Image (cartoon, rainbow, N blue to C red; front, side):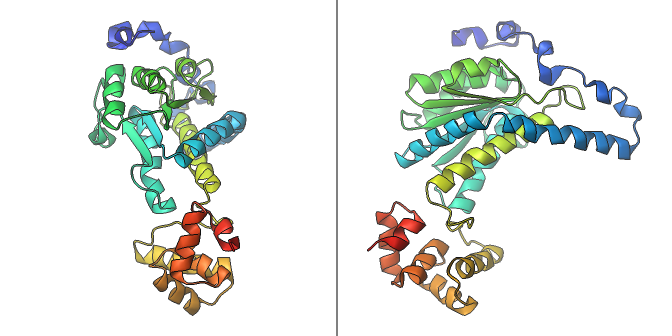
Length: 313
């Protein structure tokens, strides 16, 4: 499919009929949504939401393959790049911006590209999702390359911006992953690893910010979190690379050092001061019985993996 065939609303028929998609069909269980008492409305909404996790479970094999690809990219100095429009793009961007404070990544390692630019996060840019050339420009501006993994998100599975982005990323040698909430999605044809999580009809017809958005958020949570675990940015189940940038996180870092090492709070606080507030370094100091400088050296040699650093001779 040539990108020029995807540029306007008038040519979207090449992507299939929107009304036939599972995410666009009417939900028979909510046909009287506007007449339901609030308690009944919330009950049916909750029941529908419970089906999302089961749909995600069915895609775990593909999600796992994507995690391996992302981990490999990050180990080679590449990036995880989310690309999407509307709610889907906002979900990718949200996951990206949470990685630096949670896992100590640089802002350049996990990137979220939203059709229409960052401003579209708070004010919708109408029509931006229908222009695949925007994705080419956005990816070129950040220099997409063969070390990156690009994850395209589209609940419908047919957004032209995402199709254009996946095609261009592949042409640049990047690994490509797609996330859609319908089976046989168009974007799946342009991904090395297609992830399809069919969430079915929404309680509010076509409003894929509901079950569709929840499914996309769950998958993004898995992709980033599992990749960071694989990279050694977690010790046990502790986020030891967290940036202690406020009082809450300083307290959390101190508690993590206590939990990881069994030391007392005062000793943990002292180790954290010596480690410049970095919990991972403080943990290595205490468990390997070494200085902050030695702990930092060990972590560098271990590519940031805490367990390896602790065991280094």
